[in-house]
Amino acid sequence: MTLTLYNTLTRRQEPFETVEPGKVKMYYCGVTVYDYCHLGHARACIVWDVVRRYLQFIGYEVRYIQNFTDIDDKILNRACLEHSSMETVADRFIKAYFEDMARLGIKEADEYPRATHTINGIQRLIHELENKGFAYPADGDVYYAVRQFAEYGKLSGRKLEDMQAGQSNRVNVEDPEYQKKKDPFDFALWKAAKPGEPAWESPWGAGRPGWHIECSAMVRDRLGDTIDIHAGGADLIFPHHENEIAQSEAVTGKPLARYWLHNGMVKVDGEKMSKSLGNFTTIRELLDRGVDPMAVRLFVLTAQYRTPIDFTDEAIAAATNGWHTIKEGLLFGYQYGKKLGWDLGDGNIPILSPQYPVPNPDLERFQEVVNNDFNFPGGLTVVFELAKELRREGHILVHEGKTETSPDELKRQWQTLVTLAGVLGLEAEIEAETDKSSGLSDAEIEAKIQQRQEARKGKNFAESDRIRDELQAEGITLIDSRDGTRWHRN
Image 1 (cartoon, rainbow, N blue to C red):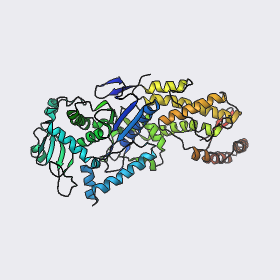
Image 2: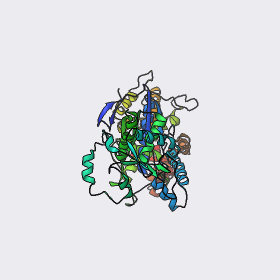
Image 3: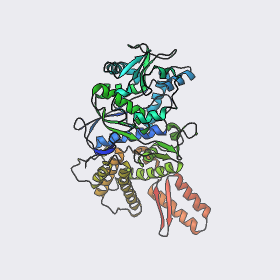
Image 4: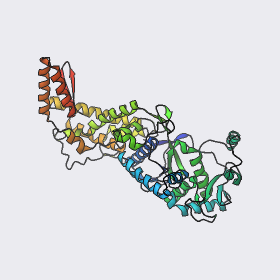
C-alpha cells in the first residue's frame, strides 16, 4: 500500500518518497496575526494536523514547522487603530490562535518561527539573491527580478506574457513603488522604512521584509534547502508560493519542496466568506455558540481536502449527528468493558499500528483508502462502520444482557476505532461523558419505562410525555416500536 499524493507542482498524483528515508520535513504557511482565526484557518489547520498525524501513524518521523507572519500592513493598520504596537497586536492574536487551536484538538507544531525573529536569515537570503543577479536595490527597497528566473510560473501554470496582457489596464504608473521597479512583475524583498513604522537596520537602509521572503528564509533556517511537503491554502499558490520557489531555488539551485499540497477554500452557504457579506465567522464565535469542536473536525474531514467545502447550518448539524455516533462507539469500552470481562487496567487503551503483528482488516482498509491522496472521507467510512456496530452491540447488551459478537472481537473493534479516530483527531471526553451518562442505573431506567407504559395504557399521555422528557433530560432516548420500547444513552 503505497502513499500517493497530488502534487500541485506536477499536476499529477505521485508516490510519496522523502528526501531522507523514514523522515518527513513539513512546512505549513501559517496565519498573519492581526485578527482572530476564522473557518478558513480552521479547515487548513485541521487538514494539515491530520496529515501529520497520519504520516506518524504509518511510521514516519515528522518534523512539522508552522510560521507566524507577525509583520504586515494589516498588523500595522490594526496597531494604528488601537494606538498600540505591532508587537502587542501580534502577541495578542498569537495567544488567541493557540487558544482556538487547542479547543479544536490541533496538536502543536514542533516549532513556530516568527518573521520578526528571522530577520538575519531574511537579510542573508536577500543578499545572496542580489549577488546572483536576481535582486536589485532601489531607493531603500530591494526587488526580485522575476524575469531572471526562467522557471517562474511553474507552480501556478501562469505565463508572464499572459499576465502582462491582462495587467496592462490595471497598472498605476504614478505609484511610487511601480516607478522604482525595473519590471511591473518584480516584487519587494525589502521595504524602506516609513515614518512611525517598525524597522530593522540592513545593508539597504532601515526597513522591513516583504511577505514572500519571510517563508523562504524560515523554511531554509528550520528545515534546510529542500523539504518534503510544503502545505497551505489554495489561495497561496500565486503569488506567495510561486515567489517562494523563485527566491529559494534561485539561491540554492535545488527544489524548495518535493510535494506542494494545497487545501481548498471554505464557502458559507455557497458564497465566499468575507466580512463585507456578513458571513465571516471566527472559530471562537462558532464554538462559543455551542458547536462541538469534534463536529467541526468531522465537518472538515467529510470533504476531500483539495476541494472547496460549503459551511451551512445543515452541514454542521449533520456533522454533529455523525460525531454523536462516533462518540458512542468511542465510549463503548468504558461503558460496557467490565460487563464483557475486559481488563482495561489503568484505562489507557493500547493504540494499534499498521505494523501490528495480528492482521487487522479494518486498519488495512483504512490505510488503503487514505493512502490515495489523504482520502480522509474514505477513512471516515471505516470509522463510522465500527462505531455503528459497537453502538448496535451496546444496545443489544443493555436489553438482552449479552452481545451477538464475542467480547474479544468487540474489544478488537473498539481498539481499532479508538486508534483510527485518534489518527483523525476525534477524541471523546471520557470522564465527562461517562459521568454525564451515569445519573440513572439501567434498572432505574427500566422502572421509569414501565411507569410510562402504565400511564399510556391508562391514556394518561401527559404523564407519559413527562416521563419521556425526564429521561431525555438525563440523556436517555426512548424509541417506541411494535416490539416495545427500546432506549439508549445519548
